[in-house]
Length: 309
Image (cartoon, rainbow, N blue to C red; front, top):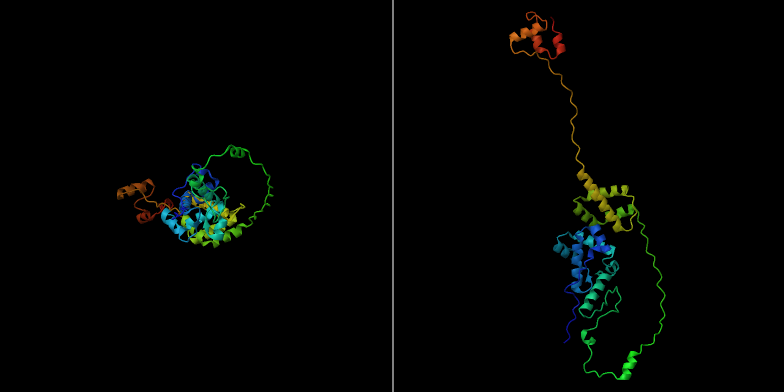
């Protein structure tokens, strides 16, 4: 009975220059360092089954449970991986399959090193000519008769080179130019409920606050974006700067309106009747002829001056 061919891998190599890859650097810039964890979990899921994984609606929940991040953020990282080339966007849109050319090439290299059959027949993105034959077919038969001198001479003679016609190069394909305006980009961002939810969670904002920041961004943005992902990343970068500037600016202090200064009431510095008489005498007033009630009611020096002498 033939043994079932194992397609999944028990391990896959991790290159030391992993973080020098321009696509990994873009992923970290657009989605943060924790996006590498999500991408690594995606690779483990893919290589466990072979060289591709079928899209499942439960996949964001599974990765969210393993990583601790929200499902909306997991979906945003997967979309970013497709936009920057870490995953094939074309195969995902046509067949709901997660794979890429680099994943398939790495899978084939691992199969070659472990001397396993490597036939990438479904969702193939690479050249399949470099397949590995089983080890038994590579071994020579010990019962094979040795070659005769004539056979050895025929083997030593190199075969005659036959020139094959070179096919013409394929016609260059012109990529469709990105032509969305800033208003179109803002409208697309507002339509994407999943993306807005991830922004609300990431920056601790309400849905209305995100709409207000989007409207302000449309007025202040003067950059031409190359893709929708570029526009979203630019908005997140701009939003983070706005929030940081609000945190660093101290709140305005409340100032009380200037209250009119109250005129200090004039009171003679006396503590007894004798001192009052001496005080009035020093002012040139006759204590016997001065109305002491007016002295007590004087509020200012001007009022005290009006007391009849």
